[in-house]
Length: 182
Ligand SMILES: Nc1nc2c(ncn2[C@@H]2O[C@H](COP(=O)(O)OP(=O)(O)OP(=O)(O)O)[C@@H](O)[C@H]2O)c(=O)[nH]1
Ligand SMILES: [Zn+2]
Image 1 (cartoon, rainbow, N blue to C red):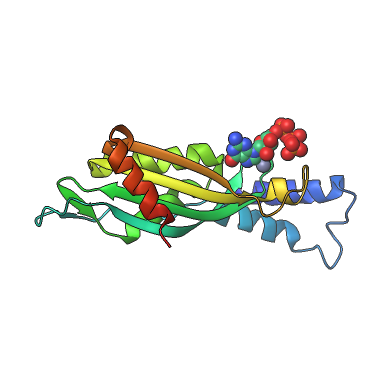
Image 2 (cartoon, rainbow, N blue to C red):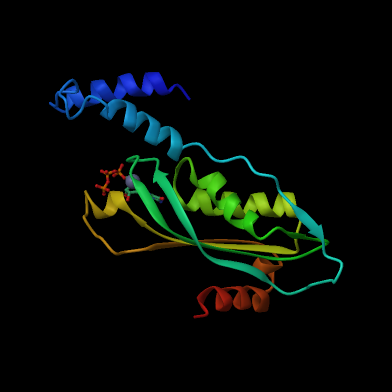
């Protein structure tokens, strides 16, 4: 990422918007905006720690209400909400914090909610090889709230299911029941 080029572009954007980027109040704004985008678009590296499932745990593991912050790729405005990420273990179980880290890894990008949801599910299926994966994301999009249609408070819900959670009706039902449990 070229932060200096982004900074120059923000200066040009401010000018194009009829603002004076050299005024005392806006002098540091191009740098701040460029750094903010760099931060919001840079995922943190992490190690995917797994453990052998020696006890043969064979029920769902679900991390509910993981905060999600991302940027929509159409307007570069935030969308934010929560992700519920679960899996049915196979031979290995995953360090719990890693479910949130996987969400962050894909959220720190220009995104659409559908792709983000699917990327989290696909990544877990590929790297953990569990019997099934379920991901639900509920998010409010600022591009719908602050501009355009100006609908605030509406949350978009997306889901992605893999393996048994997709193919077996009872497992699928159990996943959604756990997601919605109070
Ligand atoms: N499917 C999907 N659409 C999104 C997401 N985030 C934003 N959008 C939509 O992307 C669409 C872009 O549509 P356009 O008609 O090109 O853009 P626009 O004129 O700014 O649209 P309005 O928001 O209706 O004013 C809008 O309907 C947005 O609500 C997302 O995560 N998934
Ligand atoms: Zn948008």
